[in-house]
Amino acid sequence: MILSNCKIEYRSCRITHIISILVVTRMVKIGLIGTGMLGEAVGLHLLKSGFSLCVYNRTKSKTKSLEENGAIISDTPKHVAQSSELIITCVKDGDASEQILFGQDGIVAGKHDGLAVAEMSTISPNSAIQNSKRLNEEKISSLETPVMGGPNVAIDGKLVLMASGDRDVFDKYKQVFDTIANKTFFLGKSGSAHSIKIAMNLQISLLALALAEGITLTKKAGFDPEKFLEILNSTYFKTGMSENKAHKMIRDEFEPTFTLKNLKKDLGIITAAAKDFGAVLPMAERANEIYNDAIEAGFGEIDYTGILAYIKKLSEN
Image 1: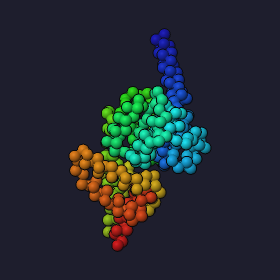
Image 2: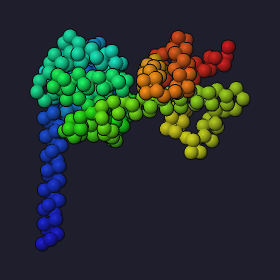
Image 3: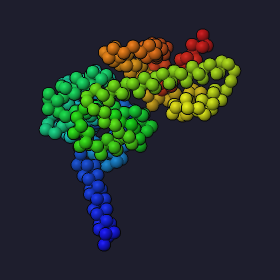
Image 4: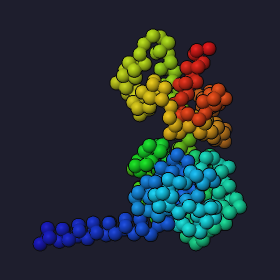
């Protein structure tokens, strides 16, 4: 009898869980603004997972694959707001974020009761705090949700998502965020998530530089850089980058998942934020200069790991 009751209770809980997922999936109207490489992959995965999606991108041609998979394409962020309950923004920088939020025909122009915005763009912590404050003044709930990972993992919902701001929004749309990412972290007050995000991107920039210089040094010494990686990856100094992307770096394969130009943009945010926080980051400042020089040398549109191509060019001069 006890076992029978347990089975009934388990089935009841299971049915309730399934129903809650179906309700969230079918009922939440999601807006997506910004369909670059990352935004497009996030949107395609949401569509594949059964969510409805209303999409805006300044360059309309970049919404084609989403439209082909069932997304509704809007002409303005205002229309996305009018059609959505939760809007995910994924644009290139703080200026673009401010424009789609507060500009003419922006999200605020289409506000309604219950509207929430999740900022996935990489912007400065101070910008995130100010945007959140302004949205709250407009009676729009806000959350910051920057992610780690590129379009290659976003397409399968395997990003890492960091959230801060309105905890109620995070809890209400947790099923959406758990669809986008296989790991989610709520970090507290507004600005927290972007502070961690830029610290993470600092690691990316320095790891790519260290690998580029290690590979270059090994080659110049007359050794196969694959042997360098084999030894590196047998120690606790190994990273996901050294185990995966580094082999493509050796083969001069720099198909972009995150461009060098975009990483340089983030380094600018990092160095500015460091000054705001009173932190001295000499390696970040030097990396910012090196990535800027690489862009001026014509390497901005390739993958950020293409910093190796720039270092190689320096060594050939």
